[in-house]
Amino acid sequence: MIEFKNVSKIYPPNYIGVKNVNLCIKEGEFVSVIGRSGSVKTTLIKLIIAEEEPTHGELTIGDWNISRIKKSEIPFLRRQIGVVFQDFKLLPKKTVFENVSFALDVCGLPRKRIAEVVSQVLRVVGLAGKEDRYPLQLSGGEQQRAVIARALAHSPKILVADEPTGNLDALNAQEIIDLLKKINSLGTTILLVTHNRDVVNALKRRVITLEQGMVVGDVEHGRYKI
Image (tube, rainbow, N blue to C red; front, side):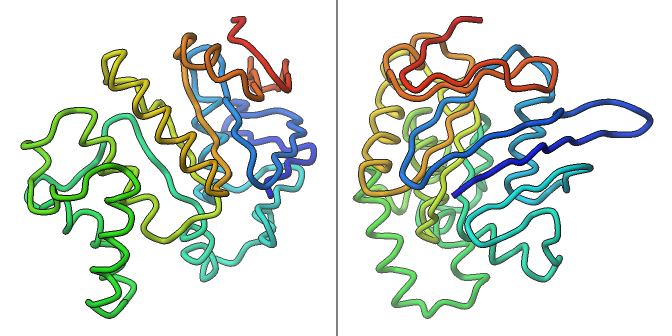
């Protein structure tokens, strides 16, 4: 599903984003990526969504070779990868329905099909009945659920969650993690980037540890040990 082979990303003049990364994330896995504050985890995400290209090595996502991907192919790749950020990035003047349907509308899906998809993903994330609310009318946890619904609209094979619980209290954070586990159980590969020690330790899933641009730990049933 996701394979890094000796991947390095070097920014001018000589700053190392990632260095000699070798990783293989299988279809259907739930993986936590941890590490001290810095750009390493962000660089990893940018490489996966083809926002950056490797300086050295080879990165493949499914059938896509990110090292040689054409610009015209990138939108199709990104429809297979949902991304959830800490700061929500919801459009404040659009309703929940409009926020989730926006990308589908841009792709030219028929309105009837858009309505079906939005209704389905809102049920999955527990926001059925709140289609007409605006982001400011939602709690923090509900806003993050709306973001996840938007990320699921294209039925991605991979969901990258970048600090999805960072702005939430413990109760809402646990609800979001439970939702990610539910999505994973339906077959979506989850890549969780987090600093939340309690979340990682409670998951008892695979943990990849990054430090100074390198993978320094990869444990099948890991814990947060930084």
